[in-house]
Amino acid sequence: MTFSRSVRSEDNGLKSSGEGVILSVAKDPLIACGRASPEGILRSAQDDTARSNELTNHRRKWMKRLFTTSALAISLIMAACGGEPATTAHASPLAAAPEIGKAAPAFQSVDTNGGKHSLADYRGKWVVLEWLNHDCPYVRKYYDNKAMQALQKKWADNGVVWLSVVSSAPGKQGHFPNEKANALTKEKGAVPKAVLVDASGTVGRAYDARTTPHMFVINPQGTMMYMGGIDDKATSRAADLKTARPHVDIALTEAMAGKPVSVPTSQPYGCSVKY
Image (cartoon, rainbow, N blue to C red; front, side):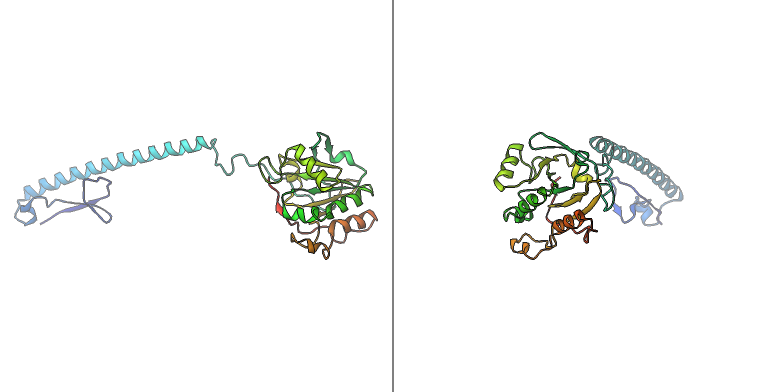
């Protein structure tokens, strides 16, 4: 005759069987063979009950240690992360994306010569913002073939303020010291009004600038008239310049003539802005 009891335990000194550790009162060979006295059976059962209680207490202590250790680990991780999840701790709310027909986002920036610029400075003038990264092949398509320089000169001659904006962060592609940036402007024959240094990405994020180039046309009242790609050929091939629709050139021509812009938005393309 045997008695058995199952309990869950993490005690490594006991044999594990499926759901838990099997405890048997049949520890005595006489009990196992059914030749023990009732007193012996009762005594063995009492011993087993005591052992079961001991295991239960052991399990409680083990679980307490587990929870204490886990809580400590979580506390250390939270402390290392500043008390908040790393992915959301200090996330800044996204600025509202600019919209056609609405006021263009105000900005202030400094150029590669230390000059200060703001959108308000050019109230009453047409403004073009061109996001720039001289290491980007899509940008080189325009600069190496003098196409960007031609646009800059054409519209500057018509009174448009053309501002190139570099939002590459320090150490990332497209960011250069001011002296190098000025040398590149001169070397390429570029003629923007200024090259703005937006190393913090503040202006870029305000305009939701995503690519280089990414283009914006703003009228004298500060209203957004066009935003998107420089043309409709999303490649870095110079040959495509001949057949591309020049979105920015056409937008300026139409808007400055008092006509509606036929294509006010388009998909920007190029290298991602290296914030």
